[in-house]
Image (cartoon, rainbow, N blue to C red; front, side, top):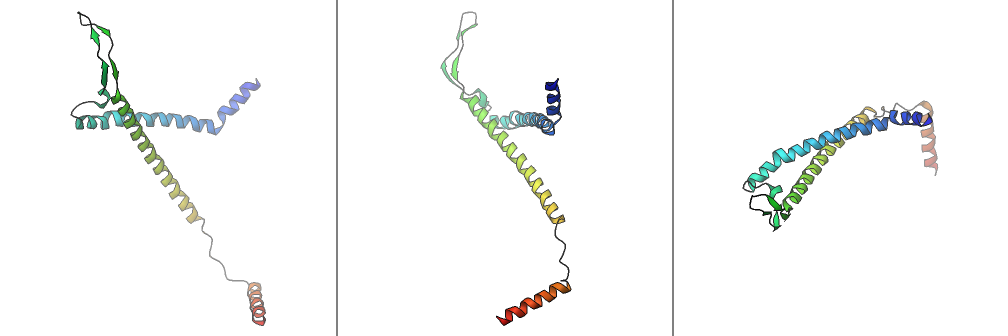
Length: 146
């Protein structure tokens, strides 16, 4: 029973819930960036490369072999460098999107902190009391005697 009690306390802590929310948001953000790459950017890259999909680029080491019926008997052996290029492009775009997202969040946070600092500005100093004026005069007289 102690195990379940400790588990319940662990689950109810705020940082576990925050982490779960972060995972859900990260998954959604990942889907958005994947769609951006696959559905918007890569078709443009394909258009620039003459309609060739970058992920289809490859260097064939040994071509596929087919029997008389046209059934593939030996699979093609190829270096698929296009997929590698595709993953590099995906990574760079996702990294850029995360960078921009974090930069926007940090800017908003800094703006909020500046507003809080302005609100907490110290009140203007009041006029010195009679005691402070008297002490300042005594200080000045002692300086003159030296």
